[in-house]
Structure formats: C-alpha cells, structure tokens
Amino acid sequence: MWLLYVALAIYLLAMSFVAFYSLAQAHLLGQFFRFRRGFRPPEPLADEALPSVTLQLPLYNERYVVQRLMAAVAQLDYPREKLEIQLLDDSTDDTGELLRAEMQRYPEVRFRYLHREDRVALKPER
Image 1 (tube, helix red, strand yellow):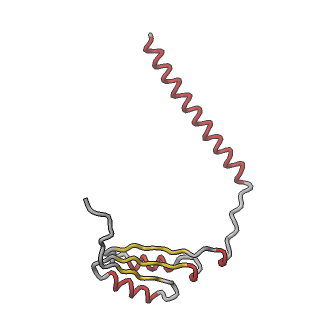
Image 2 (tube, helix red, strand yellow):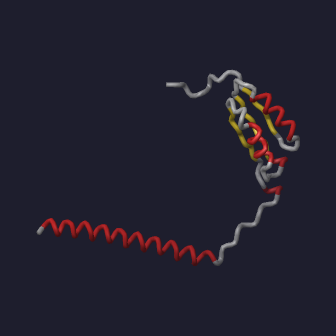
Image 3 (cartoon, one colour):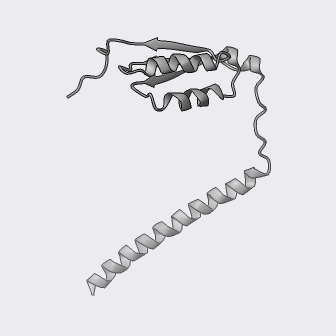
C-alpha cells in the first residue's frame, strides 16, 4: 500500500511541476501579446553617431575561402570611413597572394593586411 502512496506523490509532484511550468509559459505569452502592440523598432542612428569598428579576420591556409570571405566583408552595410578590416594572416601557403589580389578588387574597403611569419605566441600544444 505504501508503494502506491509513493507513486502517487511522485506523480503529483510531476504534475504540479508541469502545471507551474505551463502557467509560467502562459505568463510569458501574455506579456508578449501585451507589449507587442506598443513596440516600435529603434530609429536608425545617423552615420556620424556610429562608432568606429575594427573587424579582425584570422586566417591560416584558407586559400579556398578567401574570395568568398572578402566578397562577403566588402558587402557590409556600414560607413566605409568608420570600418577597418584587419586580415590577420598566419598562412604558410599562397593565401597571402590571394588576399592581396582580392584587396585590389575592393579599393573602397579599408583593408589592413597583417602577416605573421613566426607563430610562437600561440597556445602551446599538449
């Protein structure tokens, strides 16, 4: 008989958890519908108010990705004078030459090419 009471207690605990969880989800849904009507997206900032941004792209032997990466970065919708793109190249293959050639295709984008020959400062291998 006591086994029946233990099973019933576990069942009631589980059902109360489900009930409280359902009430919490219903509350979230109610909040969503309540505040959705008054929501306005923020006004976009003027170009002068935007901060300067540096985008760093670490690369290591990425010769098959370079063209797509550069094309995607060149299409960023941000004021050109406030965006600097650093190409951090540790490559040992011909990725550097491909990067320089791709940089010539996008003269309006402010790229900065940085190549590191010695990779000593990296995390040590175990």
